Length: 225
Image (cartoon, helix red, strand yellow):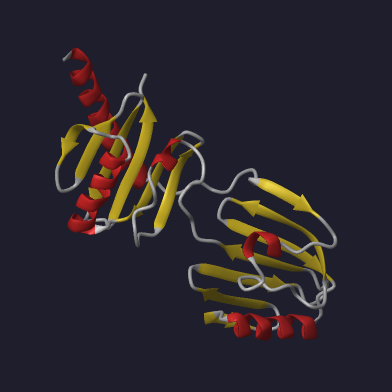
């Protein structure tokens, strides 16, 4: 009984913490998650040429990944190469174009947003591609699958201390998703309602919190102390 009360207290703290985290802005970029320095390669292996085709003309200096943002630094990109690359991007499906000049371009492809800037004097150029978040592939959170049809909006924390914020999936899908969680082994239910589901197995506590007014849902799995 004492253990169950302690677990419920922890759950309440988690729910308030998740709500507070959602109201915080994403911190400014810091150290890149990984850096590739090259003079030959193009990051097609990470994204695919259908998302980011290789530019013909100009040379890659290096590229970096900052979380969701990929930046490619190039040089020797003249007017002709830049304008031809814009046409290539349009050809693979980039639209919603807000800027298109010899110095800059901005457009989107599905959930990808692309911005390019070029110095017409030095012919140096920067490509910045913002990529959509996907369900984590490591950590305790992988005990569950991604909620069907919901975009991942934010990932808070890292490694095994991760909370995933997705779009709200609605009451009916929420019931189905919590049923999947029970089938995955979270059979000891601590809290259940139309917006909150908390359950545990032998080693972990699962919290799923819907916030319909914000169209978000927070999902986290935490190791018991």
